[in-house]
Image 1: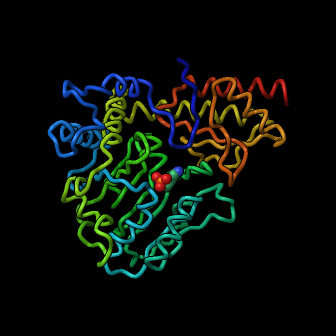
Image 2: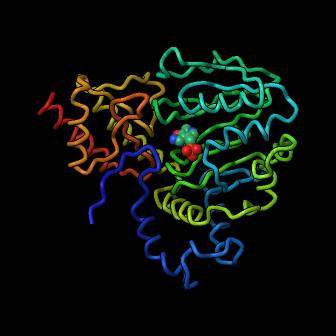
Image 3: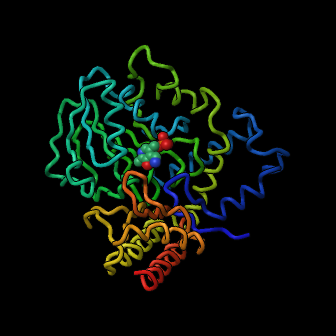
Length: 360
Ligand code: PMP
């Protein structure tokens, strides 16, 4: 069996050790005689899996006790609506930082519910930069302030956490959660689709400060109310049980990597290796301002775009897959989430050098 180095932006590479363990436990989880997929979500076995996953996630991120962790369906995209539905709480506007394609989607969804105040808008730079902390003009009456710490498509990342004062800060961490330590207490809500750094698609994790619960807009679908899910331990309806289990295996794997401090060092080394290879050559380039380049998603273009398909075909042959950039940006994008080993990045960098030597 050959495993490729999969640079997909998501669903993305998972640790081989996790997949092997899932394989070993596939038909008979822990002597239960069944697969986790076949278990009742309310049975003792699955309950123990669910509790352990949450406990491990809490330990990894040092989540304070006054935060609830929800294991939901619906993807990060559902959170674009659930955030205004749950946090507006009688206020008439919300602050948003528009710094890429995903925050743009969050903004347009929020506009269905409320007035949006753009605290920052980097459209003019084609999303190749983030605003300085000093330039952010928060509205003290905003219900909350939403931003996207890492923009998956353009590969731009905030090197700081915006300070919205007493206004709850909401972060879409889909493509950066668990990549390094995080001070959860700075946030009102953190959410993330699982399919990049957590596990398989189908699971969405929401970390919400307790005092923000119970204020959902009236007459909204019950499934969109954080409090319903919190009160029912994310089992108001059937949760994505298998994805939850796999996320739990990923959390155990993260502990074995030295937790998030250990992971951060590996991620730093991977990103440095790749950006150094791009920067030292005139053949490859990355348009993002150096101070806010993403550690997780690294877009790059070839000096001659006519060579794009040859580059991708050669990469595929070398077991380096899914490097095509997002259709809105073009070129290439290497997503180097937690599960991508340094050896994968090294193999990519070696291939890039060889391609430049023979085709450049
Ligand atoms: N936010 C970000 C930052 C993303 O990268 C993505 C998916 N690529 C989404 C939101 C949408 O996530 P989902 O497909 O889980 O709705």
